[in-house]
Image 1 (tube, one colour):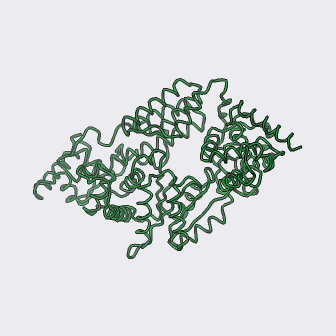
Image 2 (cartoon, helix red, strand yellow):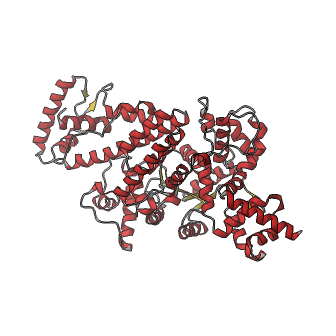
Image 3 (cartoon, rainbow, N blue to C red):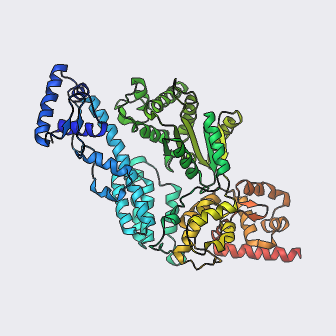
Amino acid sequence: MERKAAALVTYLAIEGPTQRSRLASLLWPDAPNKAARGNLRQLLRRLRLTLGEDSLAGEDPIWLCEGFLVDALLFRQISEAREYSKLHLFRGELLAGFSYDDCEELDEWLRLQRTRFHEQQCRAAEAEALRLEQASQLEAALETVRRLLQLQPTSEHAWQMAIRLHLRLGNRPSALLAYRDCQEQLNREFGIEPSPETRALVQELERPLEQERPRTRAPEEMTLAMLSPPQLVGREDEWALLEEAWAAGRPIYVLGEAGIGKTRLVSEFCSAQGSWLLVAARPADPSTPYATSARVSRAVLGLEPKRTLEPWVRQEIARLVPELDPSAPPLPSSPEEKARLAEALARLIRTRCGEMLALVLDDAHRADAASLELHLRVQDLLLEPEPGGDALRMLTCFRTGELAPAFEERLREHREAGLAAWLSLEPLMQTAAGELLAQMGVPRLEAIVPQLVRYTGCNPLFLIETVRSLVSAGFDGSFPAAPPLSDRVTWLVEQRLKRLSRDALRLARTVALAGADFSLELAACVLGLNVDQLAAPWKELEEAKVLRGSTFTQGVLRRLVIETLPQPVREAVLRRISACLQQRR
């Protein structure tokens, strides 16, 4: 199709019925009104001749007839229906090959739509890859990840998926090559190195084969309930607190350890209230000022593009989203510029979120410092509802102990001043853990619930991942002495241990290796310290919820505290423990 005909059909497909005056001004912005409307009449006549009289309907406004297929609209319908297996039918960008530099407003609309469709393609490809991986269709999952990397070659998360899939397929050289490609892309585009998460995968790759933990593929009969139990359990009190904060119109901070179920709880709660938007910070964000805010802005811009922005708002948001305006000003530096940017972002959210009730910032512990500061400013500005409207609720989720101390202190000040609600998620109660496990539908699982509770500390993710690992290895109804370890749980626990101070980690290893013989006097002897010098590391371990008394909060924590210690060092510590025990006797 000719470029303006293609633009007209695409615009009608996406925006729906449109007035003639609007179409004429979009397609011929520099022409006099009469000439533009004449050009539009000629274009519509040619389209009806080419596409058929039943393609376009109405005189003013004009719309596409029902049943007239446009691939962009079909793609959106498939995405909304989550029929991701059909996405291989759609390649390239929206109106690929066409340029509309001579139609400024149309060009802006197309840029935003291309960004929106590109993000939809990426999200859909990622969801399909995860679905295929969970179904153990690893080759198909890897092919989908390759398509995702063509769309988003700098997505570190996509590279992590590629590395993981190569590993599960037993192809270590390809996994290492994928890491090198990821490293090259990030260095060339952003001048940064891969995140600790990605480097952790490489450390696993570079171990000798004989030192690798055995890996087994999940069986083909792994059910959806095993992958994600359908019902939220054990969060009735937390749900009530969310309802109370929601009714009061206050911002809500939701915190807890990794895997505790923050995102699941917030997602189900917001869905029960109405429409909402979730944007997550990413591991690479801290290296780029305002990276998280830019992602939030792009997500909001894509919501209702036909709602125009005030010029000053557009110019300020262009600081974060340069494609909005090639002559965009630089990132803010002065307090006045930062305050104006916060006002613009709040205005953008009010304008484009429409009837939306909540905006969720997930994984806020990964956000860059500038975005966190801007987030708080915007949150304060959005506390007051628009005249005749309702306040947009802001929910912020982050992991315990991973948020910058200064920012966490700011959040606590908000809470103490009554400006925000604070919801700290704890592990499930044993009865709720049993309900969660019952949903997974694994025969004979109820017999080992007590062992699973002790091993996982009732962390929902750890419970699910441990059961999946047991089923993958061939569950026979018993709980093994050393259950197969999930890569995801292993990585999360190892990251948790890395955040401990040297003294706290040494004390944790002593507790783990001493077992029933442990005492503070024994630890002081093994570590060469006075008993009173153990107070600080002991407090750190309790605050990090590694220990409760002299017992590990999770069996998997104790296991990995021991297993991450090199064998020669482990044996030396055991000899030291033995010598101290004999000395005390």
